[in-house]
Amino acid sequence: MKKVRIAVLCSGGGTNLQALLNAGEAGLLPHGEVVLVIADSGDAYALRRAERHGVETAVFDKKVYPREEREREILRCLKEKEIDLVVLAGFMTVLSENFVSAYRDRILNIHPALLPSFGGVGMYGLHVHEAVLRAGVKVTGATVHVVTDVCDGGPILAQRAVEVREGDTPETLQKRVMREAEWVIYPETVESYCAKLSQEN
Ligand code: GAR
Image 1 (cartoon, rainbow, N blue to C red):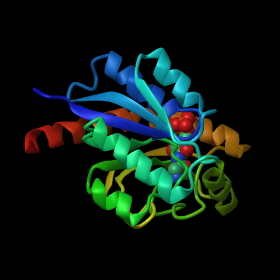
Image 2 (spheres, helix red, strand yellow):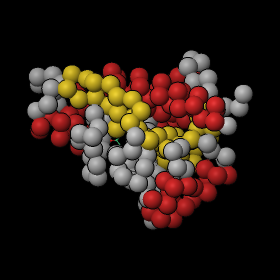
Image 3 (cartoon, protein in one colour):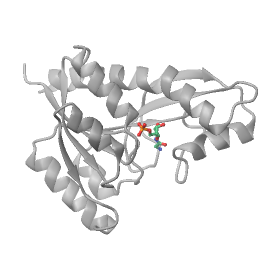
Image 4 (cartoon, helix red, strand yellow):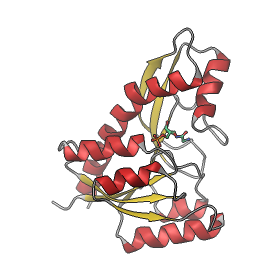
């Protein structure tokens, strides 16, 4: 069986990438393999994580490539490496319609809240947790969804709820959401999506 070739796109720390790499090494990603990590910043710690696991990396730096050119280069790289599935893991650029249509139904994203709440343009990273605390909700979580032209609006594949606690700061909440939800549901969902893609091929 041919494994689904996965590229993970990151901008920062890459803890979700780490969860995927760990899952792969533990044999929990039998239908897919992370073969490429792309970052839009040379400083992204995600790149070091990839190197440590012997995964090829590429950087298309925001400081060097304007957005359209950056997307074009990323697409070219994905095609060259025969990537089947694009997994966004803390990738902080909203992808254009053109990009999404080149990988229709083959781009997944994780969002650190229970969509459709606390999603959309400007809702990323700590901003999401700040908004959750401002709203005073008692439950938040994480969502894995298929990426479409609508920012954070694609079909939902998985969600997990996480309790908001008295005295939480955006940082404490972010950590709990990552630990209890993101790092659990992302590898599981990527694996089941890869299993589905393998059946189609
Ligand atoms: C994660 O919490 C992820 O859900 C979020 O950025 C963080 C990246 O952390 N993504 C978004 O906010 C996308 N809208 P990581 O680099 O350690 O995986």
